[in-house]
Image (cartoon, rainbow, N blue to C red; front, side, top):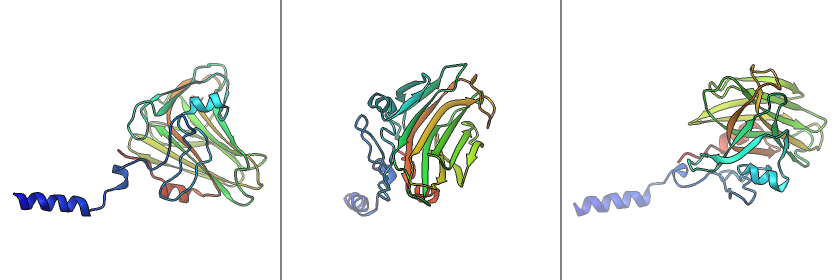
Length: 233
């Protein structure tokens, strides 16, 4: 019996432990900016307060359109309480959103990649949108069905692409646009952009849960999707 115990201990000491079981893929500290740095690649997320968005609104890093309800009260990517936001459009006569501008987001001729984690649900009465916009240049607004993962483009200009990946309880939405100038980049999240997928409507209301918002300069979707997977506890 002692030999068996020693063998088990030896195996535990020598076998590699999967990274997803030992810690967060990202270095983030709530309340201190919590911008994620992908530990696999060293890519730096340019979004400040990528998870604790209410603190980001207080600090002025995030701004709002209208008066959306933004609460840091949901279970996040690591399965911990109060580490994701519930974002609500409660205005039946206007579209509400949160947005952040990254100064000098990408060099001319380079891509900028956006990554957003959205909690899956069964609500098909409203469809959120995720807008990536380069100042005076390329842009793309993507509507997402949070039940099926199906997307629709509301508006697009220039060279742009996107894809959706299912990861446990989350959808990961990747999008990118090509910069035609060294300009600012705007990232917008609207929880209820419309009641018809792909069409905007100010009458639509509803909520989504967002686990993290990321923006990577001079990166394409393949860079961030292959090296920055979602944390799985």
